[in-house]
Length: 299
Image (tube, rainbow, N blue to C red):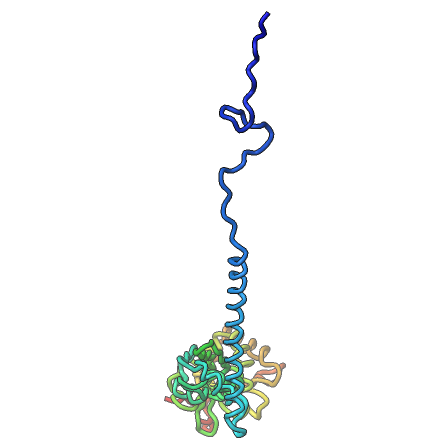
C-alpha cells in the first residue's frame, strides 16, 4: 500500500508559521540609546552650570569684602555694609507710611533717618523705631525692610483721652497719661473730658471707668479736679462740686446717683456736696460768695 505523507508544520520564521506560545513578541525595532559621550556631556554641562553660579556668588562676596575693607576705618560697619550692598543694587526705592493720621509725614521722615536712593542696609531699624516713638503722637512704631528696596513704617498713634489743664495751660493726653499734643487742643475738647490739677493724667483713666458705671453723673460732669494728688472733686453743670473720698469713689458715686434719682439733688442750686464721710452727707447751698471759678475747656 502506498503511504500518505502528513503535512509538516512550518518552521519558525517561515511564512505561515504560528508564533510561539508563552513568549512576548519582540518589537520590530529598538529605540536608539544615547551614546556614552552624549551622557557624559550632559552631566558635565550640569556641573558647569553649578560652577558658574558658585563663581558668580563668590565674586559678589569678594567684591563686598573688598569694598568694606577699602571704605576707611572711620565708617561704622553698618555704613560700610550699606555702601557695599548699595553697589549691588540694594537701595531704598520706596518708603511707605501706614497708620499715621495726625502725625505729619515730614516729621516721620525726619525721625526715620533714611531717604530714597540710600542703601537699604545702611541704617539701624532699632534706632529708627526709637526716634519714631519719641514723637508725641506716636505710641508705637515698627520699621520693616522689604528687600531689595522697600521700607515700610507702621505707626500706631495715641488716642486722645482727656484735656489736662494745669496752670492755665491745656494739653491733650492719652489714657496712660502721656502727652499727645499741646496744640490744636480745642479740636478734641468736645469729645473728651476735662481734668485739672497735678497728677490728674495718670489717675484719670481709673476715675472715668468708675464714672462709666454711673452715666447720669458722667453726663452732668464738666470737669474732674485732682486734689492733693490723692482724691477727686467733680465739677457739675449746676456749679456744684462733688467731694469724693479717697479710695472709696465707687460707693460715693453710687450714693450720689441714688440721691439724684430720689431727690434730684444735682438739679438744685448747690455749692458743694461732700461725700467723704460714709455715714453722713454734707450739703452747702450756692448762696456763698466764695465759690471758686469753674474750670473751662479751651475754645
